[in-house]
Length: 374
Image 1 (cartoon, rainbow, N blue to C red):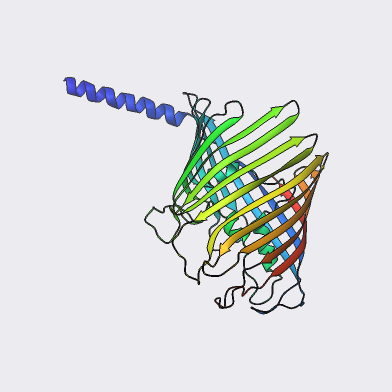
Image 2 (cartoon, rainbow, N blue to C red):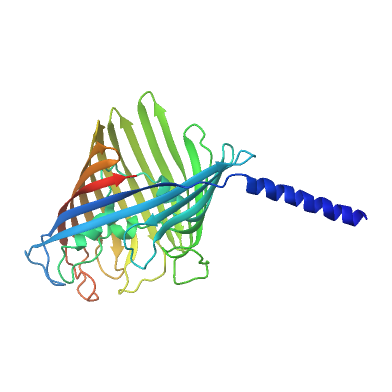
């Protein structure tokens, strides 16, 4: 009889919990996102065949579209914890057919911080601080535009791409952000494997970069009208590529001045001349000014890496970037970016045919477009 009563009690308890759970309203998702369309004119002052230098000029007209749709929603549980769901969909055709950019759940509380699980970016991407930029084109974006105008055999990635891409892609992760104390917060993130399609990868999947982690501390505080934001971040990819990033921005009376410094140590043990060694450093510095509907910025970046380990010299890049945005209201803005990039590769006399053979490149461009947020 006791067993029957106990079983009946459990059934009733489970039924009560289930009824209460299903009686509560489910999370309702809200719609958001952005749509950005740009056109640009790009010029390479030294377009030529591989291994030669001449004064040929190549001009290219390019277009770029970037559209994302966000579905977000949240609820607060009886115990005070907040649960948020986020889904980010790519609105334009993505290479590889992956239409989902991110999909993750975040559980947070005032004293516990925030824990996210799902397909998302590393904490380093969320909190790193670089030179201020009034536009939406980062250094790797400018590299894509630069390659539009480069001649045959010269359309190679700039050195800084190997340094800027230091934290992997969106993939399934665990990410924790601590509560903020006097402007200071800490974070850590881990992914078993990196890759835009790595929604179920494990650390033994050697087709992707495995065991990616980032951790660091950030600082953001106001002092009588002056805001100071800084970061110190460490990233580790595949157990052999280590990067350290520091950044600082100071904002006062509409002006923001700052920059960043990055050191990368890619200790992969591959020192053959047919493969680049991406060990290197990169720094940038810039200034921005915002007043009313206008925001303008100017920045300069310089990068170098070791290149081929058995060849004298280094690969070096410099990039100037000037950007401006005019807010028309109602989530609509006009944006323009001018960039001027120069690449000087080491003198590779007997390099592979796919490499630059000491070829330099000087690419500039003007990109303008309309941006819509919703």
